[in-house]
Image 1: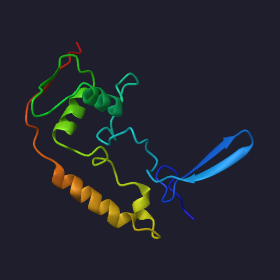
Image 2: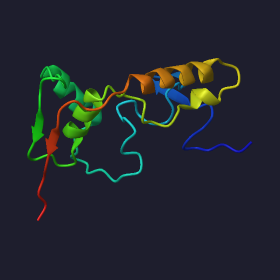
Image 3: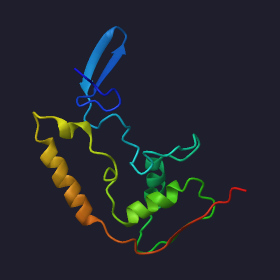
Image 4: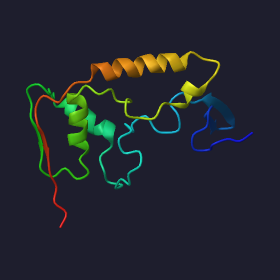
Length: 139
């Protein structure tokens, strides 16, 4: 059978350690879960802040989109500003990603569950209440 090595219908992960093997069926798909999906087709600098870390920094700082203004004068690739906008708009972390492989599994109810979850997440989104300011200069 034909298998797409980058996006298999049933992605598997084999872990080998000290002569012991464990085979896992991957639910999330090939992409790492820290990737939110808005940079899927972009080249990203190796030093760019990971999306989940930027979101964690904002949440740890107590960012409240209804009362706090975000200003990032040296934003680089804009990860903090983008994550602030996603938090402010109540965009679920995986909403912008492609659906995971599990929605293609015929033997499961994951497709309906995924559809319900994404529909509910879309309905929960809102407009960003306050401006988010970001700038960088690359001469």
